[in-house]
Amino acid sequence: MTLNVDQEMAALRRLTMHELRARFAELFAETTPAGNRLWLMRRILWRLQALAEGDLSERARRRAADLANDADLRTLPPALPQRRAARSNGTTLAAPGTVITRLYKGQTLQVRVLAKGFEFEGASYPSLSAVARAITGTHWNGRLFFRLQGGDR
Image 1 (cartoon, one colour):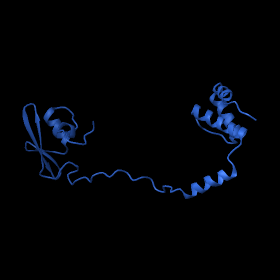
Image 2: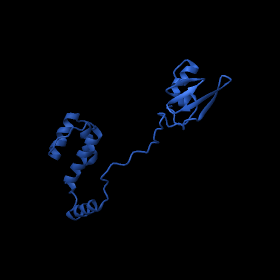
Image 3: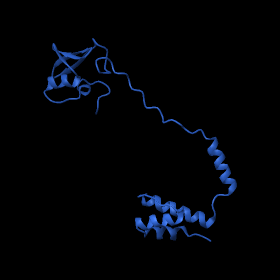
Image 4: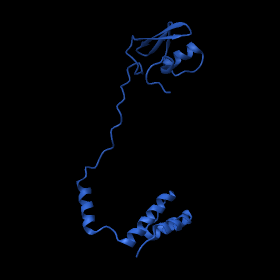
């Protein structure tokens, strides 16, 4: 039996999703929740072709099974990227005592990193964003305002 792939594909294109799922169930003897029309058409067409022209030979099936048995399969998911450990001041910026400097509207601003937060002009702040808000009066990402690496862009 020969299969005209173009004719079959044209016939499958005319079917609704419900009809495609029914055709899939008829050919594979199982239902599918698939909602991808192109995937369904390709799977159906592949199955029709396998039925018309013959499936894999027993020798090919054995070889595929051998290759699958010898494959190094991952048993654990890949490790997540390592993140730097947070310092005791709740930040990964710098060690306590470090001074962060920024030129803003003609003034040189200096913020000192503390063990728990930040100090600017004698006041203590829990985050760089709080310092930036005190300086500008509007919400800022502290890392972006002070032009440090790793800020959310």
